[in-house]
Image 1 (cartoon, rainbow, N blue to C red):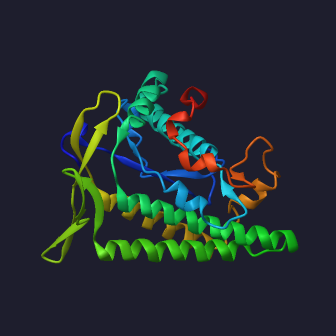
Image 2 (image 1 turned 180 degrees about the vertical axis):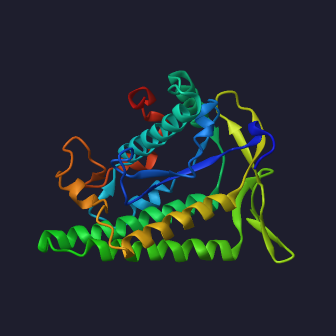
Length: 278
């Protein structure tokens, strides 16, 4: 862990998970689950994909990113509130949630590799959904489970290679540099604290902060391995995103756009109204 809490940038990315719970009805999930940042009104850094790269793909269905992050952030807040009640026997204060979100959207930095990683994860998800959507229009007995399994296996291989390569590109001392994710000593693996330049957009202050990149990759690996285990056990609680697109779950929710929106490549998380999520 980072010794000085204020020097922890605490990156969080969002992805499409597949096993809903009572708390996460639509399982768009954050990783890692750093709800401690919300408890203290301290910022997380939102890892965003390359929107333009995603929009350049030849997909019929595109992600509505505003809705994607609205659901993901709402899920994170709901989980944080549940844990806060367990610890303190009362709900999270709204002012802490607002403070956390405002501070989070005021951080600027460059996590080149993690940006590429979440771009890859989303593109592979969209490839799967688009292929299934084409099949669905011709045959409603499409093999959704098999496609999800292939997707999980693909992401597992991708993350394993990232850990094997043991390199991450970030912005440090004014330039993009390559750092190790972990080091090996006496055949044991030790995660490294990766230092990175950050700018506070509210006051223009530049500071160096740290984060443990290994934990993000390790969490992703655990999640997708667990999903693969569940699907191999023939778990029937598999969330069907195609059903959501076809409005059989909730007509008010639309995570996918049926045509490309040029404005999406300029999407900013700070356009989300946090007041509507708490």
